[in-house]
Length: 491
Image (cartoon, rainbow, N blue to C red; front, side, top):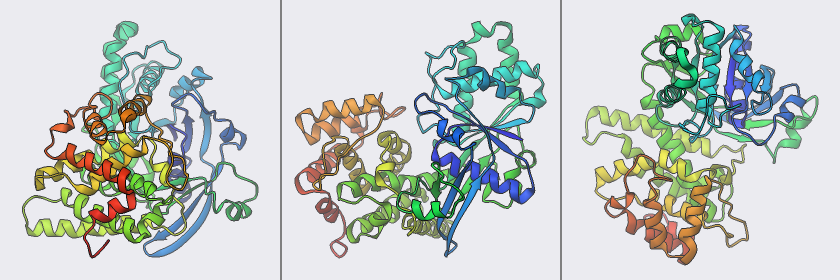
């Protein structure tokens, strides 16, 4: 079997490829991965130079036990750059053994861009590239409904499979003139032969292990420039679409049968909401707060007396309650117990003694992450409590200050990296350094940051709380601001 993978980043290499490698070993299978570069920019030369081989180092605690393993990944069979060789990209659709497509193109990657054209080589957006690939498959197999793809996007957005499917059909409609007589049968083939699965992926991947690299490299037969480090924990939840059954997907997708933490289900939503809220949501709020408090590593933030207490408060007192039913019942109590266990596991993973998870790596695309991960929890909290959650809002305030740029008191440069429209907006809002102007402008940016949401200034108390938090950070510093938020016996 061949898996076509859109994305070459650290996460996919330490998650999907590691799972495929494990599956090949456990089931004596022969699954390979063809990596497709989804965006222009850096090349695939480093991967190709190593024959598409590299190592994954897993370090941390798993079920209370310390683990430190390094495994060579040999399942990548090709690295294709459609910007250099579009024909080689389309040729992947002709592979008879190609059945599964996976992707991770960031939260902003699954989006419809009407400027993409059928004849682009390639079009800029990932869904447009996928539509091209599907059409080439449709033509190559002459519309055989047994030759479609199982598509598993790993982007961390709600309903990623459904959103990607919608984008594909938007492109079929946009390109109907170019497709001519093929338009209707191609669309019917996609609906009948292709299976868009909503998924959830969970593993903290920190990239190249700078502090441990020499020791790990010494154990390898030769230097590995693509060595990637991750925690041992992994979870891949795959929701079957309506035109597929759990049994059918398990039969088609070997990792589901390899004894790995791969869950095939009819409802991914509870897994998604729990993970996005308690793990990713906590990361997104904690990172800017800890950075502005002078810390650099997730573990150090969680072990810090004040910032660690903030992380605990954020998880247990603000994020977790938004996942519980409003009424107190026996089921709610059991659900809270389960969520508390998950929250404790999250903190244990954050405190991994072997991985230096840089807070700056979490800050990439912070505003889209906050919109996807924390804004829903903020709104649920307001609906339950009648006021905004102070810790979550402080995370947003810290992000606003981080995007101001400049330096921390210790001289560390603050380098926001996001959509240029977002960084430009913050630059303009900060021209007179008014906390209220920044707060109102950020909350009103529905067309740039809060897509699909109305002006957030309409949420009672949010503008005032955000402005006060920004002002406190500027006037008193982050550590003092966090201390003021915590109960007196903690701070």
